[in-house]
Image (cartoon, rainbow over the protein chains, first blue to last red):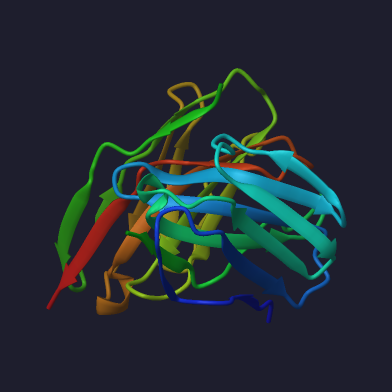
Length: 114
Length: 115
């Protein structure tokens, strides 16, 4: 079974802190994604990566950056956390093209910025 | 731009009954895929069912089936013989093309199955 893990289930940070959210997948997937989930808005794509050191902006990249130094690990960085970044963050991975096109999700990190 | 709309924020159903969750989408692309994902309380999101737009036949996975109306851009999920374990947030999602792999999600529908 594909396993996607995230470093923390719950995280509390102060405004202005630099925050790192880590995601690791064990299925050698090329594609990895970071979403944030907010009530009434569903999931929105922040960044994605289709290969090591490759990244592309999603729909809401402002205030975030990412790093992918190894294939299995994709990090989301909040350079200076703000209260409007309080949210649930979900990581996902998928194999390249073709079947089955399914994205596999991690358990999520609920981040609170105070 | 692609959009996905789920107009039912919350729904409830009695155990063993059937429930239908609605989803509409908008895209000008001809090659796309549609998905329903399930997020149980405090558990990881998992794929329930997927539909390729070029296929006319509605997808079915055990108790889960879809009603795909391409002209109307509608993609509803039917759950038969509802079980307590079906209680979850359900997301409808759209993927454009085969290699893009990017998903656009709806806002979600909370489904509660009552005993």
